[in-house]
Image (cartoon, rainbow, N blue to C red):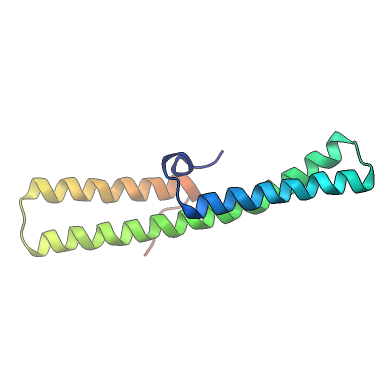
Length: 114
């Protein structure tokens, strides 16, 4: 299952990814025509290969995105602490940082490390 960010954010990267995926699907269809292949399992195996290839690309993009968000949120928390802002505001921002770290862990299965 793709991460919820795939559903929440539509940007150029996702559109390009889906465009490439559909182009590869067209390649599969062409290969099927050229070979005269009508076997569902052959086509399914090729589709599974393509999906696995692009799924890893998507996960890499998501990891990079979450890393940037965690770093930015961490800097924000440090900035608020240095300015001695109200503790409730800092707690709220720390909770946002922890939520991002939980999201990272849910995506790849390990704790975030700087």
